Amino acid sequence: MLRAFFGRHKSASTWARNIIHEAAAVLDLNIITVHVEEQWAGYPTLGDMVRDKKPDILIMTRPFRKDIETLPPMKAVHLIRDPRDIIVSGYFSHRNSHPEVFGGVAWPELITHRKRLLELDKDAGLAEEIEFSNLFLEPMASWDYHDPSILEVRMEDMIAQPEQMWVKLFTHYEMLGSDGPGKMSAVTWNLAPRRQKPKLAKHMRKVLPRVPLRALPPAYLPVVLDRYSFTRLSGSKRKPGEVDENNHYRKGVAGDWENHLTPEHLKLIEQRWPGLVERLGY
Image (cartoon, rainbow, N blue to C red; front, side, top):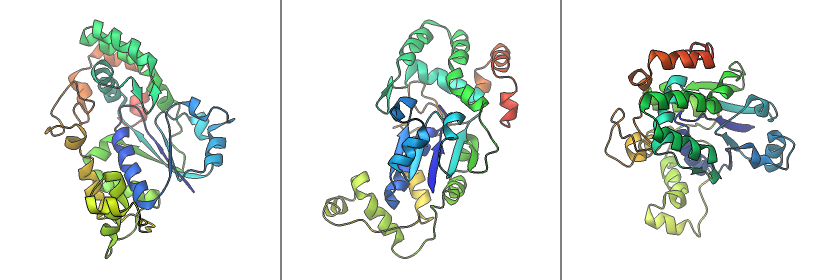
């Protein structure tokens, strides 16, 4: 059965995708990542492309419900975040750090938006960001949060209890097994070409096959979480909560909207997406 991950902009989706990609490399699963609908041009629907290409895992960074409904039976995860934090994180990212070409896909709207943000003070820029965020929040507002095939997960829980939550996700995906002799050695061996280490294993894997693994050993989870920690991803010595406004991984904590959004901003958000914050449980 297809496994799918549906991420949302500025909701730790890059972090999650890194972990899923590495887990897929351990188990020899193939992935298709979809950023924009042009990627399935030539097919009537997203589902037609997936049925043709037959990935083990589908990743979408901007999923729409109308496209999800075309997919074959699946086990999926949908990662969301407090819309107010999406707006604040988006403001700093779009102003200072987000690449204008991402995953091989150009984002011309970001170039125009960034120029505008650089002209405005923070309060006016956040108001501008609220309008720009319709690209990301409208699909969240129209989402079906009661689909039994989709595990709904909040970013806030993922960063507060990462190991516990990844156990939950990989169990939902039926990718988590048990620990046992030699399993972590098999993980290291299978990942050698991707990680480019250990050096000996990297070179030996050019001529020797991978070790078949049907599921991830639980002992692997703390290892991969350390590899993709906030400190490592940000390329700094910072811990979550320590700010670098020019880094794509700016702060790494939830609830930062309270430090930046004014009552006027909150009123704009409620007018634009009535009841969305409360409907998502925030």
